[in-house]
Length: 121
Length: 498
Image 1 (tube, helix red, strand yellow):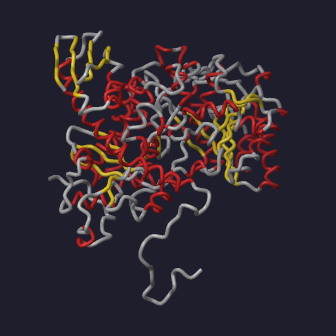
Image 2: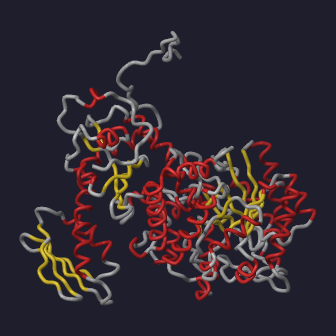
Image 3: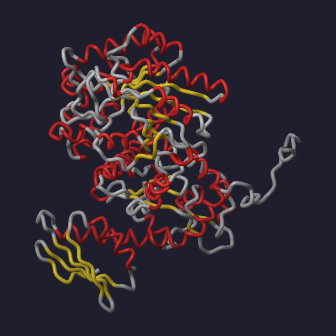
């Protein structure tokens, strides 16, 4: 993230579009929009974010530092969500299946040293 | 590097197991949330957690965790990562997920009957409407009560709770009596497990009422706001001081019904915020072993008297934390005393089971677990929904008791509301690391923000729950060894040394 300008109550940031997706930016700004006025645009290489503090009560330098951290967190969340969406769908389908159609036997066998047959019905 | 909190169950496999031929691990679904300046909590899809240094989630996603790190074993054992694209124990995880959501299995359990709007108190925070004691036209009709009870028995749930509310329901004791007797008569056929609860201000008990409650094992839930000066200020009653009447009523009910048949709830007003310790001490003096440090809800008279009832959630959180700290200290000194809201969240964090608390569920408790039959025969999605109705807003009205069960419980209104009742699909909640322990509350957000979905950054529901859950994790991180026996005693509702 590059800070284009930083005045006491207004700032403009540029975020590299190769590093962060639009969804990540939106999710990050969602949490800041309650306290800041946020404008969001994009050019060929970057997302352009303009922040202004209508209450003039925030330290925008601190806000930008937190926002950088949030961007990394939301990018991490996006990686995890994308990589695990199929296993999550499978997990929920198995959880709510009305029969045993999605059940699989775990690998390996089970036995009991006392001679009791644990798999015998 | 700093280790996460050790889990007792990290002992399944020897080191050779982790030296399989794969070079990388596979991610399993999990979320994370910062709990203080140094730690974040990782929470997987079934609510298991690990408290780890900040940046760990990023390291996991970047495949930066080495197999020789103890963290690797913790992540593996707790199903945050897997050595296969589909883990061997996926069916176990699926069973655990189903268990967490098993509160949905039996559908509506809690059936609230508002038998009368009449009340002998004029509490400024009253979240419902009330009318004076002599206006019997505000009692539910026997016909509507009968229809409501018949709907209750149509619920597939084998266990049902019939809760009588008001106003003051015991001012319409004939309705309570009829309701219990008719439910018991129907139950000769349906054979459900029924619990009866009366929510009363405990000031109108008679021998007849208490004898009936004893005969039918009716649980008494009353209101006690703390010390006399505070309770009387919050709950004015014309011609008498409410506090002494409530204490007399509580004692009388305990003597007749048994200690465990009487519980109390407090409501936090602006005045209460200054007295968390005094309120807790008052509960202990009056023989209670638990308290629910409950904030005010944004409904009914609570909104009209904003000076006494409107406060910033931050103020409530200070009150809650101060109270919780005091309660924990009492427990450390050997006094068994439970804070109920913390216990609800602890059960969600530390046990594999769901918690039957309708305000903190996803899908939300509305309809799925609770429904309200109002005095005028209309049916509402939650207790709070009928509070809105008393303000003239019928958004959450599901129908009338005379309508058929399907149209009330599965009708167009219910289907519409279902769009907003899962936090898994709400903006701001979908990515939240604390999602597993929280819930969705479309009625609250509609009432407070005019939006069923709600805007999380300014939502008092979100600010409150996120901070309380974060605070509990912070406590587990900073003082876990000392606190776990106490928290376990709260979850089990049993003193530590018994």
